[in-house]
Length: 173
Length: 173
Image 1: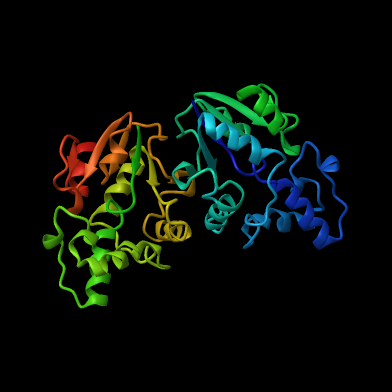
Image 2: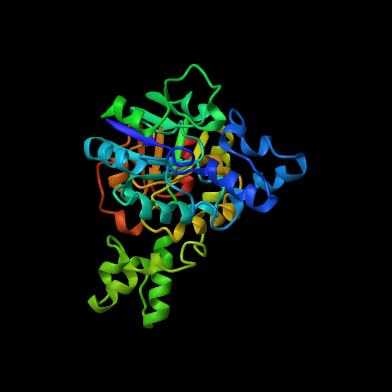
């Protein structure tokens, strides 16, 4: 079985980083609960939206993200049983490419470079399972799509959902 | 129809760059004819092999490559008719990731970021045609594999071959 796993908001806590950076720079008090159901840039004053939308273009943004809870332990177990690939739609942010590679070396060293993919569209992927937080990546996938819950996608319906890495383990291990 | 195109030695003249760097640094007189049928590092004295094998790890190596003859014109015509993706096994050299993105912006701006893939294994790709200079990438591809001639692969048999971008045009346009 071949499993593809997205990075941002599945392995790496991009959403939390947007909130942290915003709160620090604009003396804000955003929380995940407050943002629930929306993108972080949707809930800030219009004058701050451009700043939040450009977080991902900053040097160091992707390198300093925190791993999502339990992702390291569960993914390592999956990689022992299945062909596991990490697939990130990273080409939009060229500054992120080397940072993402370095980040994976630190947090997911058991996924070798042969099993890492930085791409644009994900419908090019041939395999059995795709775990992703974006419905537009999942709907064109030929295999079994799993929507990984992130604050921005809680209202999405019609796709099999996993709320945590523990739930991924229950379904796939 | 979906077409995947490799970068090194198909769009970018990596082989020529190895020869140029070697000749400059070791006062050599290598030519493509002399290297024919082998990798460049195979034909240099043993004491120089490590240096040649590490060219690709240098900052700037991938950014300064020359495009292969006719690749820009023909690929642009292909991209007008088909879904064209550039797929490079770049993850082995993390320093190359941003350079490859910048290089494509300069030489192949008509291929947008959504259609660029940096990967390890290429058997993850789902599509109709793969143009590559490495037989190990081509043999596991489900669609039609096209071996793009490079000095190192002239003895490879058993795969449909294209000797130039003009021949790609004759077969696919």
